Amino acid sequence: MQFNQINYFLRSCDTLNFTQAAKICHVSQPSLSAAIQNLEEELGGLLFERTGRAVKLTPLGESMRVHLKSIEQAKELANIAAEKIVKGETNILNIGFMCTLSPLKLLSAITPFTDEDIAHEILIHDVWESRALDLLLAGSLDCLIMAHSSDLPDRFSAQRLSDEPMLLAMHESHAFASRESVCLSDLHNQKYVDRLRCEFRKTFFEELSSHNFSMNVVLRSEREDLIGHAISEAVGVSVMPQSAAENFGLKTCKLDNFAAVRTISIVTVKDRQLHSSVDQFVEYVRSAYG
Image 1 (spheres, rainbow, N blue to C red):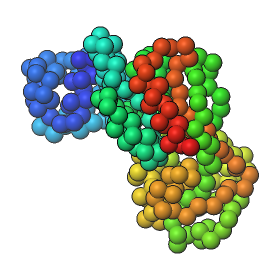
Image 2 (cartoon, rainbow, N blue to C red):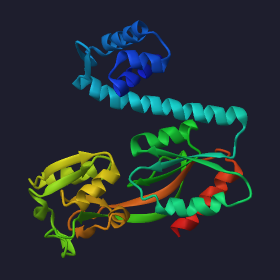
Image 3 (cartoon, rainbow, N blue to C red):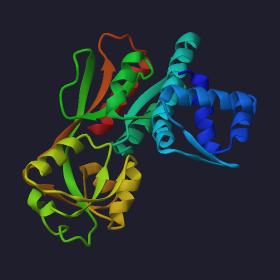
């Protein structure tokens, strides 16, 4: 699989028109179509359904769009890291920020940091736990602000910023809104909004299953903002970090028999020489978290 194939495929996903995609990619339409056909042969199935002039993604195409988009984003991060090293642009900071974290404390650190006399440019990269440490280790990120539920590998230096409990969040009209805590049995058949990026998602559903409880999952999403707004509209309840629930003005209560707490840390690669601006940024972040 080549990067040009990925580019042609993703632009075709964006436009659902091979002629337009070819123009965007500055290649001929037959060349783009041939590259996509080669990709289909490699993957073992059709990526697009072609009916006359109409084009739509197949189930395989929908799945590959997600996976190949992450490859494209990783390539972009690698290019940024390479350009920074080659040009010596050490005042450009590439900061990984886990998508399940509230941005408010980060923003309160950025304001005084960018008020300094030295010109800083900060690039915030939306990352999730499965890829974040690999990007940091590869040099695509200067530092990483992340939530984790266990100790990190020895190759990383993690400075703890805070601990945060996971709570059950709901609309103020929900029956649980006036309660301090609920049991797992109370959740049986409750309408549930599933946070696909939740650090404790697998553990939570396994715990429910072990007691033969099940949730009525009505919505799943990787987007934290969509999840928060869905609960605000009384679509269902969800397990989420306390700060996220507060940001959306949601009611919360504790979960008996599921006392999950995550640690928020700012992480760098141990023994890697960092530019002084990265060290300064780390200190501003630590101060913002108190």
